[in-house]
Each structure stands twice: as C-alpha cells, then as structure tokens.
Length: 353
Image (tube, rainbow, N blue to C red; front, side, top):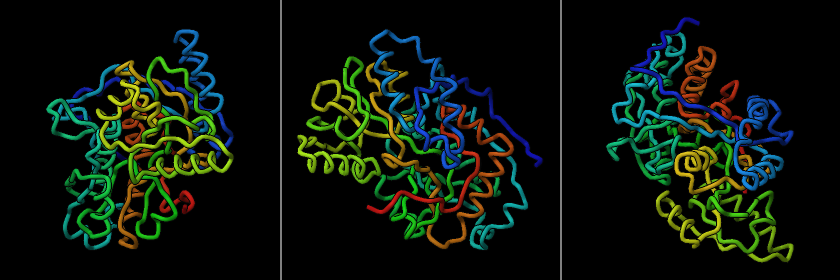
C-alpha cells in the first residue's frame, strides 16, 4: 500500500528492553507474536546487581506477559513535533458510516490519568500526550477525519461513548465480554499488568498466594481490580490471610504510599510500571501477568455498539500495521513488545465475572 509517512521533526530515540515473559499462552497467535520478541531480549536485562537480577529472573520465569521498558529520551513537549502523521486512505475512509463522512470529525476520549508512556502530561503539565493519543491520530489520519481529543475521567469514558458524546476511546481499555454487550472494539495492543514495589523490596509475586496478607493498591473500576479481588477471594477460600486492598487513581498518591510503606504493592498497567522503574529508579517490577490474570487479553479502541465505526478503525489499524507507522509509534514510546500482528473487531474478551 502506498503511504506518506510524515514525521513532524526528528523522531525520538527510545531503547526498548523486554523485562520478561515465558508462558506458552503468550506464544500463541492471540498475543500477536510478542513472546518471541520479549524472550529474545531477556538477556539484555542482566546488567543489574545480583540480588535484583535474581528477583527479575524469578519474575520472568513465572510471567505470562511482555513488559516493555523504555529508556533514553521521550518527546515530552506539548507541541509534539515528533508525532508521526500519515495520509488518508480513500478505500478505507469510504467504509465509514455516513455520519462520519458528513461530519469529517472523530471525537476521541482519552483518560486524564497519568500513566506514561500510554498517557502522560507534557512539560507544560497541562497537555496530554502518549502512545494512546498518537495511535488515535494515526487512525483519524487514515480515515481522513479531523481529530478532536477530549480528556476525561476513566469512569466517564464509558458513559460518554455510550451516550454518543465521544465516537471512540483510546485509553488502555481491555476487551471484556461484559463490555462487548455495550461497545464494539478494534484491538491494537497486548494487555499486560505488573505488580510494582519499592526498589529495595524483596517481594516476588508469582500468583495469588503471594499477595496474601499484603497491602495492595489498585485503580478503582479497572480490570486489574477484578483480578486482585478474585485472587484475594481465592486466598481466603484456601484459609490464607486476606490482602488489604486500597484504591488510588493518581500516580503521585500511590507512589508516595509505596515510598512511605503504607502499601506494599501497586497493581497496574505494565508499561507504566516499567516507565517508572526506568525513569525514577525508586520502584521495581516484582510480578507480571496477562491482562486477564491467567489468560491473554487485548487493548482496543472502544466504540458504541453497532455504530459501524469499529470495522473502519480496525481496517485503518491493519493498514498502519502493514505500512509500519503503527510499529513506529509503539517504538517511539518503548512499547514494541506489546505490538499485535492484526487488529480484530471484537476479539475474544475476558470472561464476565
């Protein structure tokens, strides 16, 4: 396919390391082949002190999801001159429902949560930037639509797509069977989660039993909350000490809680945990799981059910995957190990709880 790949400024260098993964489920087609990419680079992470390396190897051996670690410099300017843009593809734009052909606009909801490199605040501490936003721009470009990015709370993302206020949401949203009852999805990334502890912690999380009796924080209303609650219920049924689960929506708050010892672990998106580890040195990843806890999951663009928009978005993403622009954006933000080979409309989602 013919594509014009316009880079506004000099592309940002991002060195990508894989912290770990092995389980066979991640080597299946469902994960887009990321297992090999991560496994090939596990040896590159062996430069840490012996004790840290041992813990990292333990986590890697028991992990079932890829973890991207981005180092070096990111473009954190509000102008985002490095943002990758592409040209309209008429054959894909023609598949849009009339509503979008007539409006010529794509209103995209993004979360206001600070979760770099997925979504983060630029140097002006006001403008939101990141991987999710860059991918939304690429999709809008391919469809020939003017993008309007609307930041909002996590909870309001779903309500605003359901009400029609937003055409789509790009915000690290996991595909679940329950969500598919109200929304359609176009997948664009592997979903991976991580347990995060202080840099000097000796904790290792390989499964549910390892959180028994610990103080664990998580974001409310998230998929990882459901996993954590299920693990805690499993532990209590087995006679183990319950975990003390607390809720944080703000990165600064849970990092302060970790540092002060008010919580032992934070459970959230693996890319953000990796970013914090590399950029602050104050935290470490002590456990990695797929977005489904013990089964693979995918991150996707979310649209209103039966709106007809998900299929053109998936077609745009598949064009971007084939052309290389998709890979360039993930590499820019250090997320290459979470790439997928094909975008699917409404792929299998996590089972309803």
